[in-house]
Length: 173
Image (cartoon, rainbow, N blue to C red):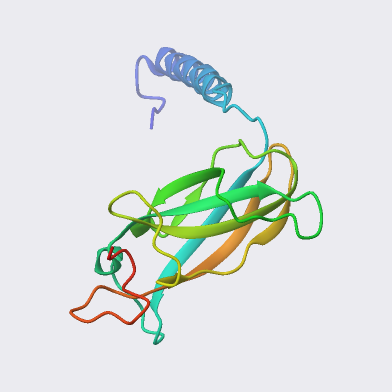
């Protein structure tokens, strides 16, 4: 604290006030520069999270136990009743262990069906019958907005010495 006994108190106070003004201007300039950084928005985005469970309801603590590397969210425009083919033509892939992901703003606006599928270490989806996911979820996508699928349960068969008749998830026959 500068007191009446400090010889240069007035000059020090002026210098400090000037520094505050320069600091404030610098902060405003930095914030303006940071906010002008652009994210290309060419549609909507999707956000989801997931957890793995075994068919007997136990939590699968590691994606590697089921030989799953990634989780892919697929989407398809819905034009009418019965128009969902569940053929994954547009998608985004996320590392399985992250347990959540958000796509870029690239999904065309309109009614859209979304579904998830586990991707094995070989880069291909797991064989049908070796896992279960919820049926396609339909949401309305809008430009610049994120639709949420909430938390999806992916039921898998972890790799073991013996696999059920349908096979273990991501174990190729």
